[in-house]
Length: 217
Image (cartoon, rainbow, N blue to C red; front, side, top):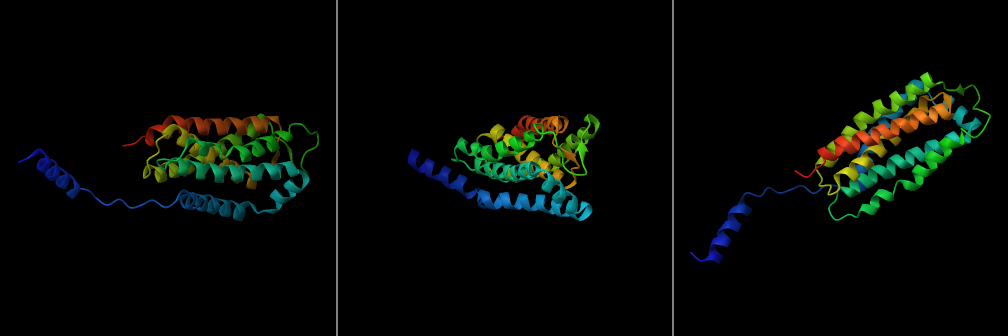
């Protein structure tokens, strides 16, 4: 048997064992699925806490409302970036997509530390009270991150660590957005410190663990 014939037989044998792979939905559609889960959690929190206190707080301190908008947009764009990075051939520049809303989120949150007046019927959080915010963000970020990792395991992220960073940013931003529903404190220094620490912990944990889970198998 000639070498050409052997190669043809080998190719036919390998091809016979191939299993059709179902094509993944586009990144924006998979992002929407994850965001629907976040929205469902928000609906439950709104049902429990109501919306009046949140709107009253935002009316007194519009910067808190802008921070919430920035956090929501950061969650959306970071999730989209994570799913886009999971598509082979997509460039790493997708990781810059959440930067503008993240700057809005950070800037509006930090503005509360520069003013002397606070939202009506609220008070500046003590370190103990602000630690509850850290626990909230981390606790909600864990299942949201796990869901994103599970959804992205079916893809093939060629930059697993960068993708995991986007997962952490999306989860932390979504959790911070959910916190706004039941957050009763002004954005003082202690509160901003705990929020920043929580976001850093979530992103760091995802980079360390999520990167390994997303490694090509």
